[in-house]
Amino acid sequence: MLTSGVSIEELQLISEHEHEILMLVRDIRQVFEDHFDRTWMALVIDGLPIDFRTIREIRELVSITAFHPGDERAIQAGVTELESFILHVRRYLLPVIKERLGVSWLLPHRRVQDKTKYLLRRLVVYTFPYNLEKLTFLTARLKSRLYYLYPEL
Image 1: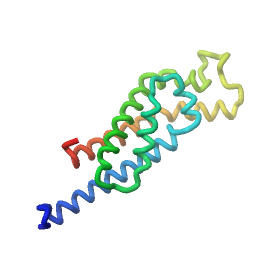
Image 2: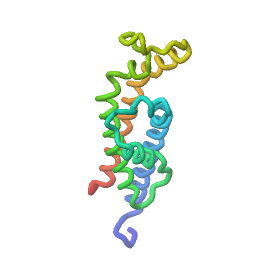
Image 3: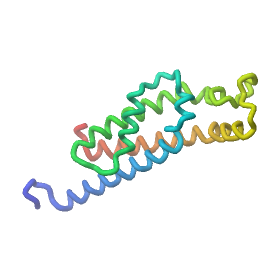
Image 4: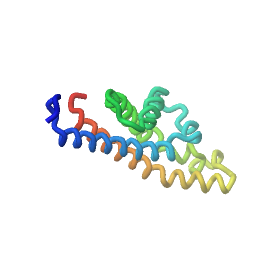
């Protein structure tokens, strides 16, 4: 037993949970940076009710590479903004992503004419729901781990 009343086993368990949180942040970073923090995405979400603070908080979350005292609040803020981002993207962008990327047959006058761009954008449209679900799943896991380790948040 240590002087603070916490045993070595409890410290190791906390350390393992913090490591798991960092691994989840790393996984979210990979998904977010690879699929959502792109120039094309900024153009597509232009006009949607997504606050600049949301993107800033998410970027701060995914920049965390080490766990320090007080980081749990920053992670909580990032998770809240990720949930808001996912909700807005699912509600406002997902139903119209084909039109926004110019690959919809409903708006032939706005369709991309370059075959290469058309194929790449179709691939984005095809994979977008999966990547959004992956981000949703990782965010939910991070939130549950965070509140398990820090129930007072």
